Image (cartoon, rainbow, N blue to C red):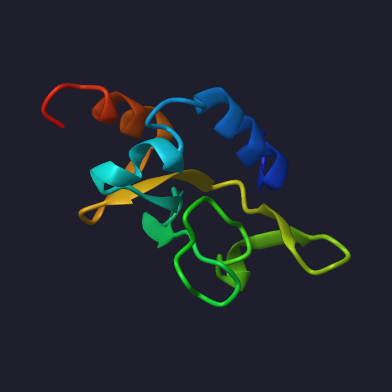
Length: 109
């Protein structure tokens, strides 16, 4: 059974891709923006804060309510539906963390 994307999962992904183009701090200069893809609908959501302002890293709080599956007692989003994956948007296309990491370190990208 697929697991919901959670704040803990995002932390694990950041740790896994640390130092590579699979994290925002290492790929921003290449035009990547943190984003989420709903694999069910194909919709890409640029990562935003609660106020709708684009965020410099992956934030669950800015995702639309219909994607939210769980909140903590302060109202922060801690889990979204299982079809959501984190990655990056660049020039209108979605890239997984793995794809972004590969592109950042390939000559000419």
